[in-house]
Length: 388
Ligand code: SF4
Ligand code: SF4
Image (cartoon, rainbow, N blue to C red; front, top):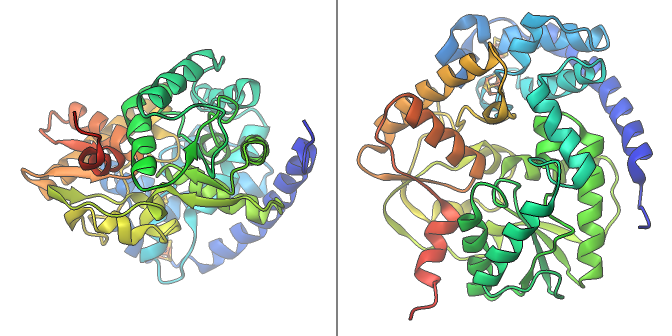
């Protein structure tokens, strides 16, 4: 396969990116006044207390970055209890982007072998078989074929839009993959999928902090889109893939293929009895699909402390298996589910992000909360399902 930039160039991009993060860490240390305004915005600080606050994370991330990746247990705890949601930035008078520092510090530490193994595995899987959640892509390929067939889409057929699912869709939630394809077709989009584009790479690039691995995967999807005659790559609502598409522009990926969220291509379909939880990805980092997303529910959850659009499980927290991080993560998810259950009342919570729906369901189980959660694609596809 002819590579446009290739892994080596992306590794060089990582080096430059880390150098700029070191500068940013120095600036952030100076800019943070310790005012504490961000604490109420941070899901992690609300659940775990002020020892897990954004300013503590700035200090930990800066220490890791300025020591070129030296990370003790305390630093790792602070880096891996952050869901990279950006809620603190929205609240901070200085606009400090804590999530950027945490992301870069995770990479610096990972290069020194300091990363929870369950998170490191995401990047290893992605690099080995092109799917972040499994070492072999065989099963996800079968799931893709089945969901595509049910939605009337032929994998590998030419099409104007290549849909690249989140790896959650080809493992845990094939129903969301099927609904997404039905939704695109029902909106008149000539969508296709490919067994060679199972995962865009956002989870590897962002959550597992290996931008080079994610960018190489994204480049593979671009090549597949070109081969199938597609003009656009369609992203699911997962915030990690949207952040990766932005990173690809920073890394200088040159392509005529455009990137669009599925929610830029479909019409809203109001859902009675639904409350919207738009996710940090679509509420803060990628606002273009917002009109469709917002048109889909009776009302939205609020986006000011303490009801910020963070599910608590972003940044790879849902995958963590090791203690004590896993226990801390569970406390965050349970506390978040309790807040969201109060917000939703008897209504169904709908979200465009598959990671949000996973985290919120997991939190509701841990907190023993009755909370109905649905994925937005499934809600929007329902009225468009062919009858009979
Ligand atoms: S990015 Fe989100 S989880 Fe991380 S420190 Fe900021 S508010 Fe807290
Ligand atoms: S709001 Fe900003 S300046 Fe204030 S403590 Fe939080 S990160 Fe620091």
